[in-house]
Amino acid sequence: MGVGAKDDIENWITGEKLGLSGTLDLLDWNSLINDTTAISNLLMVPNLETGHLEPLMKKFTAEEERQMKRMLQRVDVLAKHAMENGVRLMVDAEQTYFQPAISRLALEMQRKFNREKPIIFNTYQCYLKDAYDNVTVDVELSRREGWYFGAKLVRGAYMYQERDRAKEIGYEDPINPDYEATNRMYHKCLEYVLEEIDHSRKANVMVATHNEDTVKYTLEKMNEMGLSPAENKVYFGQLLGMCDQISFPLGQAGIPVYKYVPYGPVNEVIPYLSRRAQENRGFMKGSQRERSLLWTELKRRVLAGQIVYKPVY
Picture 1 (tube, rainbow, N blue to C red):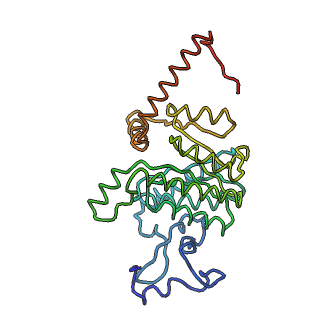
Picture 2 (spheres, helix red, strand yellow):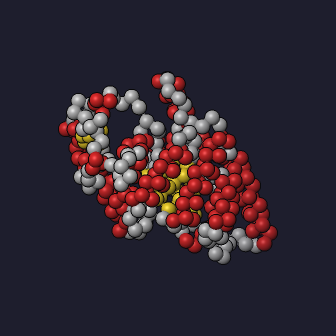
Picture 3 (cartoon, rainbow, N blue to C red):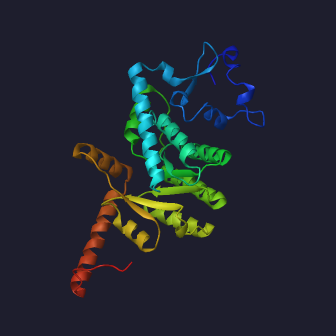
């Protein structure tokens, strides 16, 4: 792979690191940490001079090491609080040049906290060409190690940044060529996770989308596989104020659905919402439809004398 010369790397992998089959693949390499509870051994990298794996934190300055430890401690506190209160903790995704570190931390938290049920969810951005590979590798690792897999599936929100950076630096564009390809990737990843739920019952998925076709596709697949909404293994999520015409019927049908509430300073929330609008290219069309539905409902209530109206759930 061009990581180093043969003489440099032949001592990296020794007998105690091999699996029962005597082989070492990508999944085992991903697991090469000595102690998931020891912060100093969390991220291991090869030293080309010695031929041994060493903690990445040895390369940090003293202040960087303190910042890293504080960050890991905060993540641990959040995960423990989620587990103690019986709620799920979903780790958001960022640009590809940050994501490997985020995914690694999410993976380590899943190993630690997802032993009895899925508490920690990692987010997979399906506008990426390697989204399916990332999902399948992590699912396979969860099977081998016996923990519950949790995934939040989104389309993605950093398309312009990703393409500009790829062009500037000169590497392959990591984004799918068009929106239709992203839809296919989303459905491919979703179907794979649904099949894992059907097969093992040790996976959960948050279908985070404002796309009505994807919602219908998910419900159809669940029906085909006999996955009942009452099992609470498949959830849906939309942003507060967006696509209520999707959220409310799902909730009224007894399907777990959540409204995501962005919280923070206006100057930080507005750019976030702008990215969501870019991510959902049919957003304006959906807004027009939602406005039409609201107007229809308002007229119905006026004519029926139900200005103050509470639906029966």
